Length: 184
Image (cartoon, rainbow, N blue to C red; front, side, top):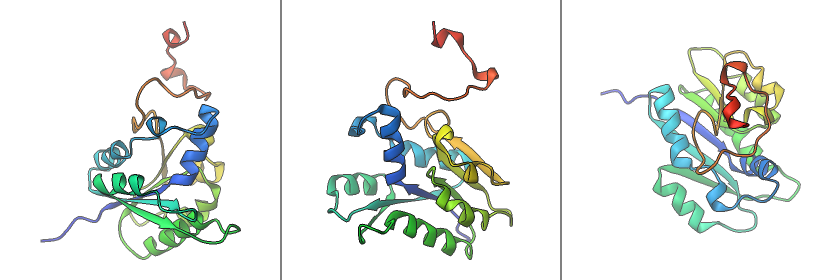
């Protein structure tokens, strides 16, 4: 019996948290952060296959045990990293993972806005592999957004990753999505 190749969900927790902080104009509280179980379910539903979630986080100042336990409980693998203050350790680890995936089958969904990943994602284009970036579309680096063959999805609007009221985002609204009642 052949096991289905998973979709790899690579989460740049540091990047998402920083961007969310700029949207909210403050450091996000736990209840304001994405519901990661919804994100992994979204990817599985969207691509109709099991997803293997890998959450990369900077643990140079210690391990956030409650968060690590929460990730593990929903089936996401926490990858706590440490290094010197002059290293972008989360980026380094994600780049190494993208390079390793170039030699393996599997679809890849990146959760980040960072242009540092454009070249590594570009190397994965082709060969029947599905590629996507799931983030806040208006903050996504053009180098990522413009990659041919890359599906761009929104963490809030497509994945429904947040509880409560819509986030206070300012973005260009496609005219077919414009609802004047939201502003009245």
